[in-house]
Image (tube, rainbow, N blue to C red; front, top):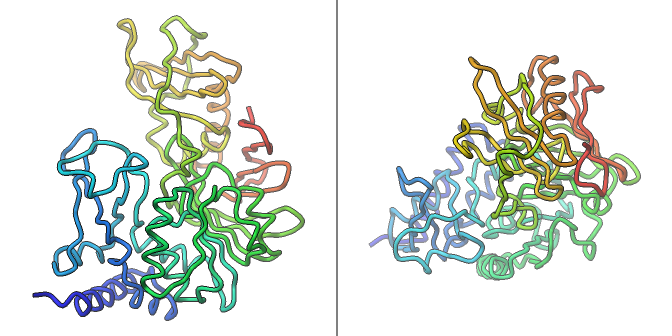
Amino acid sequence: MTDPEKSAARLRRQLADRLSEAGHLKSPQWQAAVEAVPRHKFLSGGFFRSVPGSSPTAYAPVLPDEYSEGWLSLCYADESLVTQIAGTVVPRDITGTIARQPSSSSTLPSLMVDMLEALDVEDGNAVLEIGTGTGYNAGLLAHRIGVENITTVETDPDVAASARHALWGCGYQVDVVVADGRKGYADSAPYDRVIATCGVTRVRQEWVNQTRPGGIILTTLRGGLWSSGLAKLTRTGDGTAEGAFISEASFMRARQEKPESNLDIPGPDDGERRRTHLGGDIAHDWTARFIIDNTMDGLSLIGGVSLAGEPPSDYFLHPESGSFAAVSGSGDEGYTVRQGGPLRMWDTAERAIGEWREQGSPGVTAFRIRVTPEAQTVYLESAPGVAWVKPAGTASSL
């Protein structure tokens, strides 16, 4: 029979060695944290794994068994492990499979330590974590700088309770708060570091206000077109922060920012039709989607819809305003767009993508971000005049 404590300790050391060899772990402090914090304890409710070949993706539960070397090995694989589906469903609720969207997970360890290394924490730093999840990331932080320096915020009370139970059971009495993390947590401010482990459409002004001058904010920006960038900002002045995008890292979106599930497709005669040089296949390009998302909040995309016998179209929708752009055609035959509503979405997409292509179509890490009380601006470091602005308090820059 497996001795779970010895097996888990060995698997933690092996995970840390793999992360170090791959260049993710760079400092001895984070190496020690990975070797010490028992990830499997934060997965004691089990997890889901995707069913190969399923479409839409289905998930099957994997229930915990600390005496199983196989189960422990999965816990210490460099893999994201889904722990909740559809906002409420956990592994013990399912006996077969479920084909719904994941809503909580334990992120793959390599991405976790990439972000923790990038956070540049120092001894005694006060850290705010947005998105507790299983609590494993908070455990790593607590091991590195002490439980008294960590505040972690989770919007789901059940997820927060499980994380608190796991953290405290491992000896990390971290302050786990149930709240909308997009607003930060003013009661424990100011912070030296803010790290978000969920995707948001904007760097919230509350985070900037609750960060000390010179402090760091690390978050992924992710909109409705599923592309994202990991932004590392420094609080630079009165209500301002600025920094660079350091990778294409992606997280689940904040619960409050998830798109509507019931989207209305406009009729085949709605809107105005014209030719366009930009096709819906632009959505296959990560950076192009990133740019479009950074022109407007609240976008959704439904691809390959055919109405009334028309050729399939990709529908870019903005439910809040009722605006849409339906793009059809191909590179060989040319493209047609039909758009309607108060926001001329495709006009703006053409301008934004055109400006980006004029600069050589650089990747996400070529961009920077500036946040002020008035606006959020994403711009090219090599060409600061090429910028996309979202005014504060509005849904769009269009």
